[in-house]
Length: 399
Image (cartoon, rainbow, N blue to C red):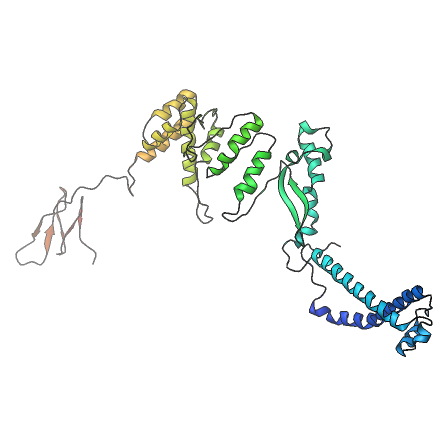
């Protein structure tokens, strides 16, 4: 049966006080009597005296202060002196021994207690990490794991912190592991993690940072150690270095799948389980078509930005047709036609202003009137009321 990892309960908890009292009551007299017997035995050896064997008779003789029977021929004063020396030496030894044990013992609430006896750290120790490094790198085949330098074993995580402020073995991660470090601001992330890992890497390294401190610390040292070139990609000019090379994301893009995958990096949507996402896929499809049109015609993202500013420009459609992507060109054309319509609630043209309708009374003094609709039809009598005129017809309101 396995036990849970972590700090163990204290052996001096209040619930264990009764057991300790029972043990103390049972063993304290026996240990004290044994120390007296040892003192008498040492004294008897020094003065050629005798001592009774350790047992009940010796205990009764000491309890009755019958020293002549307990250690005949041995001075009692000398026995007491040796007893004081032995008790002092034993107390001193127990004190220092307890201090050593207490410093190594797992204390409740100790944050490093779980690491001191964690079997999961076995694969990160130098022996196991060296064997894994040899199996992962072909250039190390045939090398004894114990002869590997630390930079070939893996990334150094640090030394295990043991109770009592002691340091344990150094832990390594292999080159196929992922390390996530949660560290507070100004806690040395670049100094303790990024810079050592980049400088100790045996091969090519890609390092990213939003500040210039990482580049300024590793660029010259890395180039000197590897005799290679350091490539700086700094489009925002954080390091104030001149741009020496350019990267075109559309270079080498030739299929719809590649364009769609690249477009996915430019579209960010917020998932909502209650609503269906329509704008994210539509935006990705639009960028996919524009990326493919620019890539097949050896254009760049600057042209894609211009096409997005002019939704009705036919250039990307023509480029897709010339490259043989007829379905993609047709889809892009439909998207542009939909974007060119006015963004209103209806596509019908606005109605002309209403024309007034003529009314006249049926006869003098009659309460009824005759309404002439806005058409050439023969008028029909209706009950007298106020007329409401519409663009193409006139009708009375409902009663």
